[in-house]
Length: 118
Length: 111
Image (tube, rainbow over all chains, first blue to last red; front, side, top):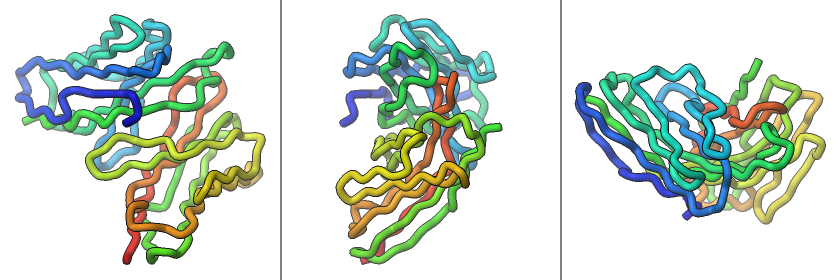
């Protein structure tokens, strides 16, 4: 148990559906991340939020929409996805030091949501 | 550019030592990490090393860093069947929050 929870653990959705993934961290961290893990690619960063502000958006299609209402919660809203979006979506959190970007060094991951798009 | 590479697979016998290797290309790495992922689970941080260190030991785990060759290794002593998992090497770069991950090495421990 890392202190980062994700729901649901498994999700099957059609291409016309709208769904949301939820992440919650209980570690008092101030930065949260969405990563995508698919079978044939290394782990890919999607979004970074620091102090509830989106600070990185790694060229992710607009059918993925993140939301960070507070420092403990992170959502990923999904709509009109494609079958190639099927993957494990991992949330992570970390505590950034006063040095800002690059000074955080321990990211704690949730168990992931296994998404299948049919 | 950013590139972290690992071999895909390693098989060892229970009780032997395992050595998982990683190479990276960006010399501005600040920290290098090893994560473990068991089936159906997220990534678990095992250990990390600051880029100005060359070795770190933590119980059965030893991390070696050769900064000149941009080579990182993880040695697991007395490998157990519970160590079977995928091991990811990752680096953090100066000025970037996100980590860059390798593709992972699948460690299979045979009884």
